[in-house]
Image 1 (cartoon, helix red, strand yellow):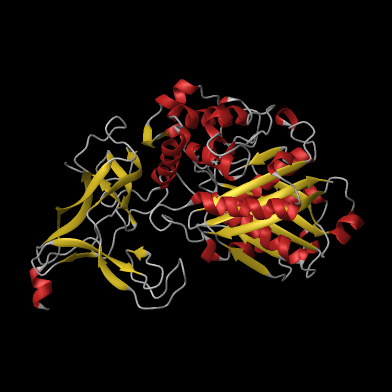
Image 2 (cartoon, rainbow over the protein chains, first blue to last red; image 1 turned 45 degrees about the vertical axis):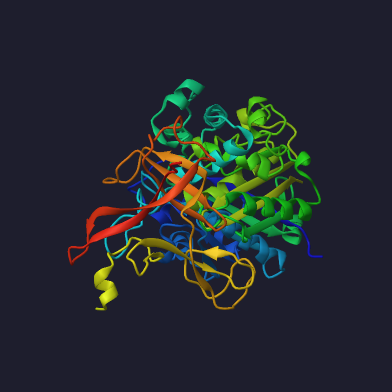
Amino acid sequence: MSEDVYVLGVDMIKFGRFPHRTIDGLGAEAALLALDDAGLGIRDMQALYLGNVGHVTQFVGQKILQQIGQTGIPVVNCTNACASGATAFREAYLAVKSGEFDLVLAVGVEQMGKGLLGNAGGGDDGIPREGLLGSRLMPALFAEVGMEHSRKYGTKPEHFAKVSVKNHHHSTLNPKAMYQIETPLEEVMGAEMIAYPNTKLMCSVNVDGSAAAVIASAKKARELGMGRAVRVRASALTSDRFTQRDLTLPDFNTCTRDAAKIAYEKAGIGPQDINLVELHDCFATAEIVHYENLGLCGEGEAGAFIDSGATYLGGKVPVNVSGGLLSKGHPLGATGIANIYEVATHLRGEAGARQVEGARLGLTHVLGLGQACAVHVLEKV
Amino acid sequence: MSDTALANPPTIVPFLKFGADGAPYLEGQQCADCGEIYTTERIACSKCFSRKPFKAVKLPTTGELYTFSIVHRSYPGIKVPFVSATVDLDGACSLKGTLVDVTPDPDHVKTGMRVEVVFRELEHRNKDGRTYVSYFFAPKKD
């Protein structure tokens, strides 16, 4: 059995809109923050794994090194939709776990601009399929998943809306979130309808951002000091295995359940052992279905679970205390590593006003449409 | 250009076909081993991995609304609101489409409602001036 793998340094920039900056400049900033957090420099890194969606054909990883130090190390540019950052982190983890390297850097970065994500689907004939063949836009896809939950369990629009109330509340405690604004239930439900039942305040915020992590072998972590190290207890990545409707309505549930099962088994724990979760709340409807997919509550209980306050800071298992994608923002390629930063910060006891007291085990989850699902379990050392 | 191509209007999806009588229908590809039906051409079955040749089958024209969303914001030029629907065709596969002939609000659109496949001409024309045809879902009339 190979040895444990540790996060020695991790950080993110405050998410926002930076149209006048470069993608490599944004990534380089997070890379330096993470290196500083670990007390290391780029000369100490043996490989770089980069997660990005929009600029991935442009050698973003290499360009970051051109900004902060060209050491000639191997660079892998990863893209896996919204799981790109987590995929880069996992590749870095696997490289260390395999024994090939002792110290590597994972960076996630995205520069997005505003607007709807998806594809209008115009063919050679120039006719957009959007509206003719239903909707392939993200708000509608995740709304349909929410309505599937409503159909099965009677989940109400209020249940979905409460997710936004909670995550926007949490973000008021996170200075690195895009927004720090309370949004009462009436305001969430009364906001512009985008794709029923998701209103504008129930859709994640498109922002620019970056996050990075320094990952180390046990040997190197012992050598450098375990003081603020965080152990990676499990890393899981899945794609969509065949299910009844996956090719018609992307099945976000099964790949999440599969990844969670693998991660819990690898970590030798169950969902009841987890102290906090950062999950993929790209839309409010998504957070509800993932409560059950990750085993945080029983089948069909997600509506009652949000009603109970269990997923609020101070609740049984706080979810998205960072503010989540709904309010912290969702720079696609950076999100997976930003989640690692959030959970690690709590495990280190450094989360300030939003600290989950006594956190020992945390879980991160991201989901890329396509599908790619990544789950990581982190543990306080 | 063949006579068939002249006779039949252009379609918005390749699996919308026309019978000898000119009537439109949707065609699926059925796995010879497990019976799974797909709307796309393929070389193997993603469910059972069989590589046996697929059999073309006519898809049923009735089904059930499995889930939906009512889209109020879309790309510029796309008419809203519209109902994005995922329909389970009776005894066949599921199919994505737009539900028409219904008031687009949650009081009128319900999961589990019976729907039928309808074929409509679009306002779009091809370079030969021929009108495109697509499929839609509509509430099933008893």
